Image (cartoon, rainbow, N blue to C red; front, side, top):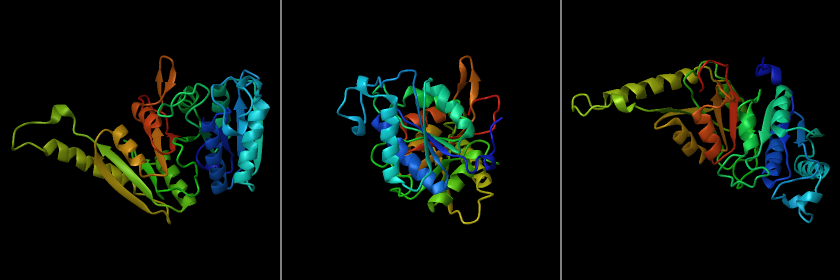
Length: 304
């Protein structure tokens, strides 16, 4: 059984590194996050190969061909970078001869937050999420941050001064809402809670006396859901709510353009080949402009 939010207080921020520039930007962000929370930072490198087999190395590791760069070199480079950035953060490192997906999911059992980058060894463009990050997001036991974008890798001094959280179908006691409130408190910024709504196509009508009624009904329901989500805001947290017509995936990706962090909840559904994220979480992870945190919600039968 996963730990509660309170049960994770004081646990380290864990970040997976693999020698890519994307993973080192994630380490930068994770160091800031650990400093914000006042918790240790743990750097983890996991691979079944002793040498780095990727196509593109980070700047800190340039000068040698990939086949000559060993796991210890990758971790040492990441540790030096983190120490330069946040010298006061307690740091530990580990090199593990295991599949990274397995290692990071296991590490998430004893972490307050798990952090990864977007692009790993495959060199896939950052508009797509790397296979390791996507696989881990579907199984992590704690909130997981995917650090997207290369323009800003800072958690403590963001550009927009705003945490955006997506309001789901069951906002009462939402773990994602609690995470967003706490993150905003750490950063001393407001929260923008966004509830997307749509009028299903089969409910529309061309009759002039009925036109617009289905849309108003769904908009009203969205307003009520948002009000429920904001019914228990902690003292000292500034929250603004808004409802937006559109598909939740598109609405949240659009909101990410003006956010320093996007938080969404995910109820992982069981499929033939194991746990999988819902379509909204999957789409946001692939296309968000800012870092995304996926927060596990209590399990139910259907996917979120």
